[in-house]
Image (tube, rainbow, N blue to C red):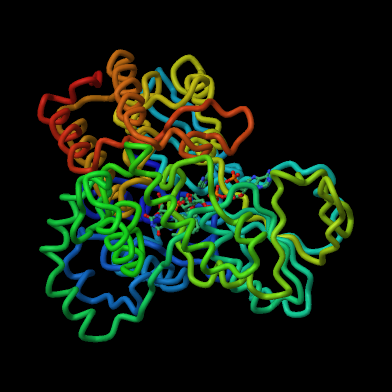
Length: 529
Ligand code: FAD
Ligand code: N01
């Protein structure tokens, strides 16, 4: 029997295995469906895939040596560079040998007689372990909508979250792209460059802001390296762990002229500056939000030459920032090219896919290739696909039928010794993910060390603590504008999914303090047996 099974070899699984094996000396088996490490950065190889958190933040902080030896080449690294980084980490900390690749966990059952987990894979392996750790990613369970006729299409189809490893050449082809979230927005300029014709099917226009990417030269990287300790400290001063200069309290407290000037500065600064780094009230006050929303709408009108297309691309009816901020580099300009067309599927919905076209309410669009940039069954998708059963054989998906309910996002009642890394109801995707992952993995490793040291067999959230956390997460979210858009944060992109805001918005430092206080109080809210 092993001490632990860790599922996933992305940022989370790699660090979790490092802590459990290299620091605690435990026996650990990592299991990964992909043929290599990287998680998100292994699967999402579509043209234009790129990180939108600055490279010095979007990386591990646990090893000063790693920080000093790795050089980032751009402010916002592209997918191959992040994947290289994660491969380097896996090699450097000798993690590969702990993973079985090309293997999917398809079942996990808690055995109440031995307080152990029996983990089953698609290869037929059955692995018993005391601790079962889901580092399976919030955005790893891809979702292609069930358009009628989808399987009849005779051309090529692509899903962005499972992109082919070989280069896809769209030259001379008529390409359809469905979806204009962060992925679609990154893809459009690249596909437009190659394709003979590109038709973009949009359901909700994005509030896309400029990425503002630039190369990092040797001096810039040397400055970053010299400053890492200070950067790491400062990250915790910001609710999302992303550092900004000059964040102001209220958009409504300033004159329209001052506000306009400030928004211009933030627009030019690029990245998440308008969203998380401008005025604090834009995510809590609708009138404040409307000031920045209108600023962005004006920018779109200026960028897009055709007024009808500009109008279709203009977001309305939901607050800016309530869906995940989308950053662009050439997205709006692509629509100024004659061979790029925008179809608004709210006015003319997609009825079906035929063998050679996408059929909307008003016509057939003949295409050779279809790209689905349609997102993920976020947070719970990858967990439910493992068929996890806790006490009494209860399925996790049944326990969470009304929405996920893990205490602190870490563990849920009835499922002892199961840990979620950046699970639902933790700050997860609204906290710079590598830092959120480190914080969770550290907590889990400390917890396991504590259990082993004191001869406990199991840890499990108490139902009252779980309920209290569910309510707290909802109250904090309801005090903001974020539940006011149909986003994947809420599960709104998956028909039939309960509408529950799945991210804790109390801020990363506050959340970390709650976790640390729980530990200091003897794992308050958890039963240790
Ligand atoms: P993942 O990287 O998703 O890894 C989970 C792994 O678990 C996957 O490799 C998967 O194959 C494996 N797995 C899942 N289920 C099973 C199973 N049953 N059996 C075996 N293996 C399984 N976040 C940011 O903070 N900034 C960004 O700029 C950013 N950009 C992103 C860009 C894209 C295109 C996407 C999709 C997400 C982005 N994210 C970003 C979020 C990103 O997912 C996280 O930053 C981070 O990479 C998550 O790491 P992880 O290890 O938790 O999960
Ligand atoms: O997925 P999404 P994504 N008919 O769910 C549309 C991270 N990420 O892959 O908005 C027609 O955001 C859907 O429309 P609507 C980031 O956290 C980061 O783009 O639901 N359209 C939407 O336009 C991001 O948020 C980067 O109305 C349909 C799109 O498909 C997360 O991953 C890059 C449809 C899906 O957008 C997910 O991003 C990429 C239907 N039936 C990803 N169903 C960075 O830049 C869905 N859509 C760092």
